[in-house]
Length: 112
Image (cartoon, rainbow, N blue to C red; front, side):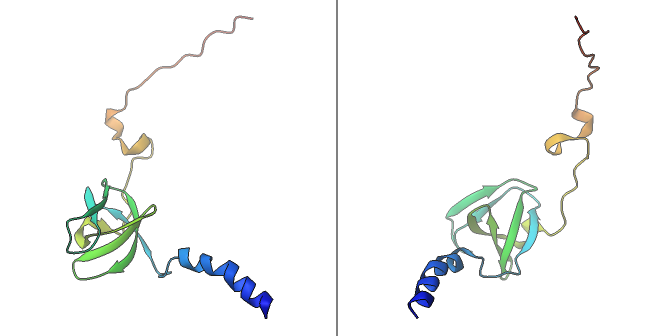
């Protein structure tokens, strides 16, 4: 009996940090948006740039509770999409390929 209590005491904190809703869906922001502490508050908990990946943990009327890294907040429902944003394959960090400079790199001659 004491082993069962000890095992429970050791494992209980794990249940506190696990997500309560295992059905959280992956989404991305469609514009820059601020996450609010409560749906009807003005307290900003975080700011997200367009294209930021979030997890939707709860949906309510016109607002969605999302998780970004270790922060949670409410954002307007129309500010997220479950469709992953498209990024040009050759462009680092989502920069348009037309803005990338072209470089003709020649390695230095071997001096041996």
